[in-house]
Amino acid sequence: MNSRLAAVVFGLFCTTLSAADNITPEASKPESRRLFTAEGLPTDNKFFPIAVWLQLPQNAARYKAAGINLYLGLWDGPTKTQLATLKKASMPVICAQNRTALEDKNDPIIAGWMHDDEPDNAQSLGKNKGYGPPVPPVSITRDYGSLHTADPSRPVILNLGQGVAWDDYIGRGVRRNHPEDYAEYARGCDIASFDIYPVVHDSPQIAGKLEFVAKGVERLIGWTGGRKPVWNCIECTHIGNPDACATPQQVRSEVWMGLIRGSRGIIYFVHQFKPVFREAALLDNPEMLQAVTDINRQIRDLAPVLNSPTLKDQLMVRVSASDANIAAMVKHHDRATYVFAANLCNAPSHAIFTTRSTNPGASAECLGESRNLAVQAGNFTDDFVPYAVHLYRIPDE
Image (cartoon, rainbow, N blue to C red; front, side):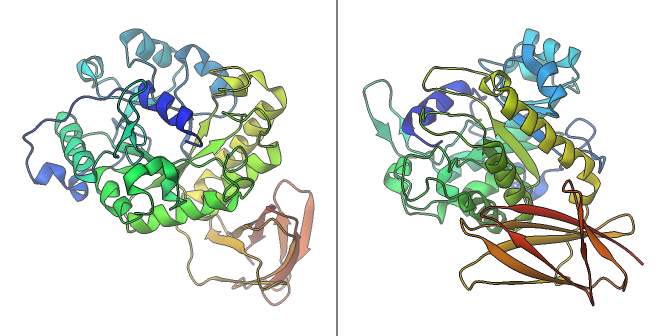
């Protein structure tokens, strides 16, 4: 998380089944796991995971109305009451594999299993006792084998800390500046995720630099070899910084930076610890709640596009300044080419996009912006304010 306080709180939030000492070598291999079966996450290309972290099941209907389609983690759970409440709201959950969960493992409301949060961070030794080293990657791989053995039908998610995006994170303790650990951690899961919250961050190295969200996604995909879905967490409250909070536009930028870099799922972190504790702070902020709802609606509408293959070597992007960085992704779906682009710099930029569109009279529709750009010989141009996101749709001939 963005502070030691949050790391400690998160560490207390999640409970998983202890790893078995004896597992078969085959069970410990990530490649042996089947992803997304009927008992796990939906395989429909209209489904894109939009999760909320560790929230009360009683709020599931309100989150569902905001476009959330998945719970991740349950406080002191899962319990039978929690699962029943989520089932009533038709809200699937990825949760700890405790005894109650295993007794109800045929319940389709359980979409997957999770490790303890942020094992890559220095681990608390108890109140006033300081911190020990991170959990070794080999322990995560062993636990993964145990989770898989108990239920091979569902995916296992591992959420990692901000060291994914920032090598110098002091919260990793003795493993600070050891990014080589992450390829080993990634072996112990089916879905890898991470969190970093730039707007509320307390380090000047990160504070306000939204591009670290995109950087973390890109690095984690590299460490998984591109063979596993990568998800990422998004800030939308003060968290632990009473003097800073992401704006709706910054939240949208972080979401789309992650998606453009290849994230396959979004996790909203909605807690607030300061100035006062609020477990569901997003629900208490009408402006942010509306913004998140709008973002989620657009993701849902574009889910078939996002779930389609990314086309490589189909797009060239040129920018006006040598230090500018426009990230872009191109897709083709339902007789149209989609270009999703984000400015990864806190500076304005002008971009020239060159696509392989064969429609000589095409125009690029700017989704959600009520404007169109002319496409001439496969080229179109646009301006980007700092951290701007533009989404384009170019119909086929």
